[in-house]
Length: 214
Image 1: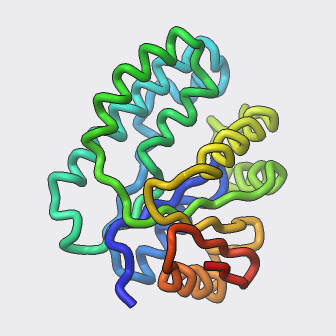
Image 2: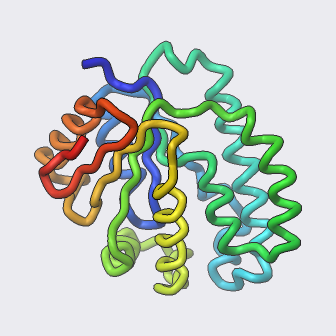
């Protein structure tokens, strides 16, 4: 069966988005579009003092991701399969957590103008798991800037993602219990996901353990 041409993997910090995109891209021989978080000069300071550096951090991410998405749209998106490790709305999901009401109002004025020009994926894969699993994975990958991430912040982020995808209907959505899989090392887990992608028939699908529910 033909794969969706443009697939996006989303989920909270530490859930394994980039690892999965890397592995899937190698398996399916697709082009990759990866978030370049390292170029944000405000991010390390944000984790130390969120209130002070939130607006600069979120605006930088918004403009950086927009530039990347515009470059993608200018290419022939359907000439080859593409995998990305973020959905553009991610910028706003984080902003709702980190910005004050006044800052968010200003942010939204820019976001609405940019979002209309961003290409829409053919399938979104939403990875979710518990905060304990996220913290363990964040610790294991050992990024210095992430050591200050608090469990409460991660819990809030998980709730924002869950709320957003609960009513999501813009594209087909495959929800995956990421805590049940080791996509980095387990070929059978990757096989199960590829079969679930190929098995999508409607707007919603769920992969829990090895069971796919279309």
